[in-house]
Length: 460
Image (cartoon, rainbow, N blue to C red; front, side):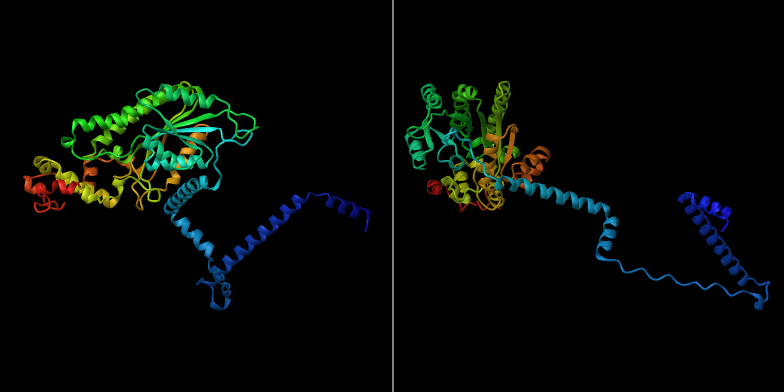
């Protein structure tokens, strides 16, 4: 090899790799192009008529492409998802929403939720419950808060209620006797308890108590019936016991609440006030008044950094706790007794619709949501307990809490559904005819069933 050849080879080795690759690609492309042109010329000549058959080239042999392999499960699934994008999107949204709701509902049950304690391990957080000790919601809330580490004071007004609290046999569930007419002395004693140093045991360092919250639970049971048959005396008693008593109790604790920056929780029924059905004027009126009072109180105390929360309660299952006696009576017998106490004209105008609504509500458990109705449609009381604890402890609580089965659904129905549809769902029909037509028919209240002489017996 001469020196010129070596010089030429050295020059060739310095050519960049990309130029070499481009040259190879260009050569391959030219080769494929000329091959395609040759195949086209061969096909044209083999099918031409002007050449003799002996001179025609044989047509090119085309090898059929092999069939594609069968699609697997994931490929078929992907193809179906691409062909049904709308259905896939709706399914993903539904599954995501259901998963989030299940996670949010199960999350509070997975961690311990306890009240803060003093440095020596003693209890220091105090909660006041202003509600009847015989009410199942008041009782279960007191037991649950005591189990979580709170010192619970239950407001009582009589010796019987005080004895009911003592019967719980819990050291940290204590009665707080408050006279609504003159509550100053009772509140002063309660303030001294909160401000006095406490000793968990002899020799232990003292610690002070802290008022965490005041829970106001007005009575959640209301009479039902036409406005015509509701006496002014009953209206006065209901307004005094539910509205005026709630306002007076709140006023009595306001100074203490402001001093300790405690939170206020007001619990009211939600289902019947949301629907405002016929024959439930007392409950709808009283809950509306309590809602307005709570809203005004929240606006006033918000300027001082105090949270006021309104709990709208749905239906709960209180079968294990034991509710009031009226929950164990037969709804049909109670309804019959109420109707028999009305005048003949009232029965003619309202009996059929009243009984139909009571039967529809009893079958569907849709109008007993204000109290512990029991039945399969009611939520577990643990949901209420966890919500109350969260309202007392979270940093920024929401102002309105909807807890219990139906609390949100019936609120939406009451806001958006026409009143005629709601009445039709509850069995309300237009009354046509006289007394005989109004008190006979589907409700089963015919003349033989409601003799005047049996009114007192039916009441008993």
